[in-house]
Length: 130
Image (cartoon, rainbow, N blue to C red; front, side, top):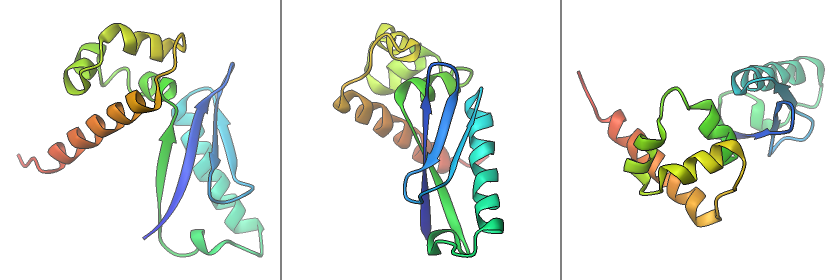
């Protein structure tokens, strides 16, 4: 399936979103949820008002969101505590607090460790039946 990669980043006063693999699609908002809605609206407007639509957004496609660590931690702070993140990643809770506030940025290896742990948890949850 075709994939549209959306980058979500925190700036000083808002969250911005843009399509990494399609030029001209941008969105933003005060929250990640607003930025996600804005970028989905932008894709629909792009398809509606442009005659030359990239093949990537013709027909069926999936959206993949790529966050910076600070934005991800703030977006999911009501779901994951720093203690829970420490348990699944092995990274100290204080480090997560520094990452969430923007005081520090994780090294690439730390960011990949967080991503891998979340993907592993997601796969585990997808296998659960109730």
